[in-house]
Image (cartoon, rainbow, N blue to C red; front, side, top):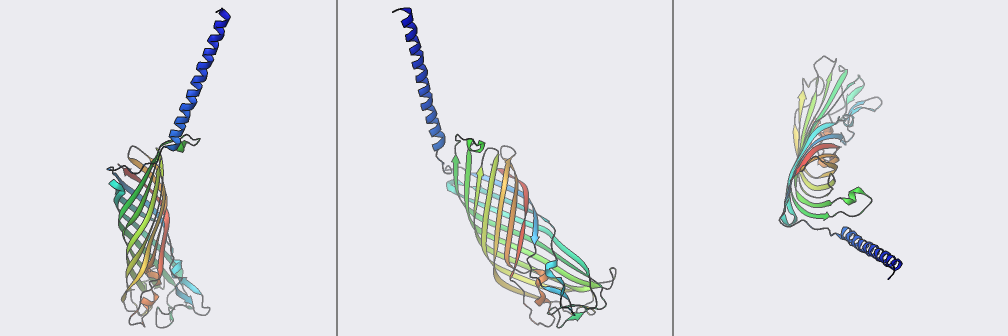
Length: 356
């Protein structure tokens, strides 16, 4: 075998080795690609637990959905000078605290509390001799010719507590080849089916007072209402979690039996302005409690996360204090509460959570 032939054979051997390596690489890459793309989503592993605690500060805006009940009218024109819907709230602070556990076999529990405090609105406006308090706040249209200033206030507090069972389904997806960085990370998706009990308590107070000057003693009336709703609820929560980020959303709805109460009191001397005795009433009705939340979550450490999101709470079948004109009617021996009213709050949440 001459030298030229040896060189040819050596070259063919190198080409064959290179081609074989390329073929093996392609086959290996295909196997890896198949492994990334077909890695099965696995259920929540038996025997494992996950405990979580959430603390959110809430910044809620109340949409005063009270009926536009006229409180003061101009008698010659019949126009409304002031109504219950004129009392709007500024942003109110609140908290949400949740403690729960995803248990073995996909069954868990959860306790939660939500409180929104300091919902307050007020207004001061001028009244004239042609303005009057309208029926049924009195037995007839009642003028206050000596009054030139009226002040209305409205305050409200909402507390809610719940206890739930969780039926959890969890998928753990391995990384996959993708042009998107999120898809190249391990991803956990958790679905919670929620069933449980929820209580909501709404306490309100509204007042309307009149005076001849800004510094003179005032006279008027105040109304207090209390609405307690006891609901069985269902809900759904989903959470997808990557290495550093997570997104979460939930919906809850409850059908409630509502126990409502209202009472009135007199501010100052009632005789020159509103000859109204103090009184009260109770009622029962059917209402609802609804909640929606969506949050973006950022990991701070091994078990701590930062939360930022949006919330909405909706209560129906409650008694709102400014709308209880029938309760204030001095001509009624057994006044009734107006119970067909709603409360709607929306706003942001900012807080932390721990999962371990």
